[in-house]
Image (cartoon, rainbow, N blue to C red; front, side):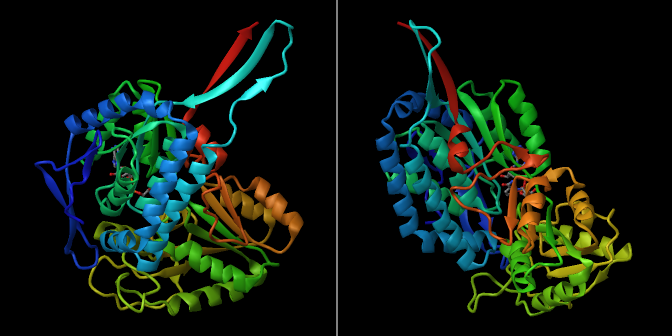
Length: 474
Ligand code: NAD
C-alpha cells in the first residue's frame, strides 16, 4: 500500500518522477514513499478542481451526503490498517493512531448529515411587492493544508465540511506524515467522488501553497499549523482576497482550583499534557494550581509521570508515551527544559532511560521563572511547568497573558466559578473538568494569534459557503 501512487489529480492517482521516503521516527526505516510534485502538478490540480466545481456545487445535497457516508464507512473499515500506517510514520501509540482514523470518519458522517439540514433564510417583507431571502452557496475551490501531528483528523475536519458544502478541494499534507492522510483521500475516491472533486499534491510546502493561492478558482485556504506559517499564508491570501481559515498554535493553561476533584484533575492533566506525546495544539502547556492543593496535585501528577513507560508506539504492551515526530522536536523540547533549569527551575520527575529513536523524556518542572521559554512558548512535547496561584482574578490574568488563545482547561466543583472562568478565559476551546474537548459537532478554533474561523459544527460548514442575498420584486 505504501508504494501505491500518491498524487491525485483529476480523478487519476499518479506517480511523479521525484519520490520522497517517509521514515519511522523510532527505527529510521522507510515506511513508504510519496510522489513529490511541484508547481506544475499543483496548478493542474487546481485546474481540475475548478473544472469539477460547477457540477459538484449543483449535485443534490442528498447525493453528496451519500458519498461522504460511503467514504466514512470505508475509513472505518480500514481504521486498523490506516492507523497502523499512521503510527509507523508519525511514531504515535497505535491505539491513539487507530482512534484518530476512526474519529476522522466521524467528521465525514457528521457533515454528510449537516449537508442535508436547512440553510439560508426568508425575511419578513416590508413592502407588498418585495420579498427578501438568503441562499448559501459553496464558496469555490478550497485549498486544504495540514500538519503532521494529527494528519488524518485535521484533514477530515477540513475535507468533510468543504465537500459537504459543495466545494471542490486541492490538498497538501505534511510530508513528515503523509501516508495515512493520503489513504483518507483514497477512501473518498474509492467511495466514488467525481473526478477533480478532491485533488492531492505532495511537494515543497511553499511552492505548492503558492501555486494553490495564485489560482483564480481558489477562494478559501484552510490551514492548520504554526502561527508563523499562518501569518505567511494570510499575507499571501490577501493578494487575491482569498478567505483564510487558520488553526494555529496554542499555549493552553490548565488551572486546578482549590475545590477541584484532584483525582479527576490528575487524570485530566495526564491526558491534556501527554496525548500524542504532547504534540497537540490544544495540549496543556502551563499548569496553574491553587496554593491550597498545590502540594497534593503536584506530587500526585509527578508520581503519575514517574510511572510512565516510554517506547515504540507499535510495540506491545503499548507504552504510555511514544516517540516525537523527529529529533528536531526532541531537541526543541529538551532545550526548553534545559533553559528553564539554567534559570533556576527544578525538575520534579525522574530521569528516564530512553530507547534509541526520537524519544523525549516526560518532565514536570516547578519554580519556573515566568519569562523563560517553557512558560511562554508552545512546548509541543512532553514537558511542562507548574505554577502556584492564590486567587481567581490573578490566575485568569496569568492564563490570558499570552498572544495565543486556542484552548484552556480548568477543574472546579463550583458552578458559579464554572461560568465566571468560562466567560473570561480568552480561548476558543475550554475543557471544564474535561481534558478531551474535541468532537465533530464542536466548533474548534482560537482567539488572538491562534487563528481565524472555526472548524467542526454548523459554523464549520458555513465557513466554506457564501451567503447570497436575494431581493425579489413581485
Ligand atoms: P508548521 O506550520 O511548520 O507546518 C504545518 C504545515 O505547513 C506542514 O504541512 C508544513 O509542511 C507546511 N508548511 C511549512 N512551511 C510552509 C510555508 N512556508 N508555506 C506553506 N506551508 C508551509 O507546523 P508543524 O510543525 O507542522 O505543526 C505544529 C504547529 O501546528 C504548532 O504550532 C501547533 O500548535 C500547530 N497546530 C495547530 C492546530 C490547530 O488546530 N490550531 C492543530 C495542529 C497543529
